Image (cartoon, rainbow, N blue to C red):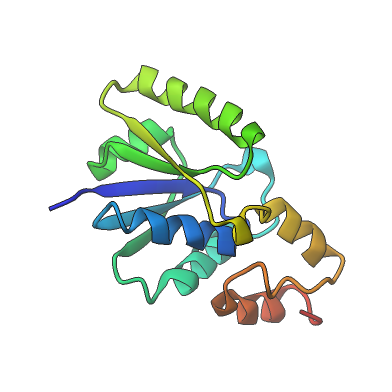
Length: 162
């Protein structure tokens, strides 16, 4: 039996890049816990309820993905879940520098904590939630950037021209 991992983030909103990383993680782990950070410091565009709903809708056919919210230190959340491995997606060198620093900080808090870095496919490497939010905010078409499962929620709650 392989193990579970945690994929933390704000998922504001979940993107095709996120799904790409989740699919890759499922080749190494039996289960992925998508941990949606409440983190009001980042001032999310979408509510925690909508971010959870979008993440659940986007991953509902994966079978071995669980979506949960968390509002504490990632290391403490991981201990609560009994999971010592986190996955992080890397799109560019700038992501690596930031993620490496966070990874070291987390392992300084719990010596059993491991961070695994995964790259999305080249097709999804440019996608970020902030790019999606920017396009979306101005009424642009984001249907090629986000899972098709979340488009109804976006249309219903936020923008009428997606």
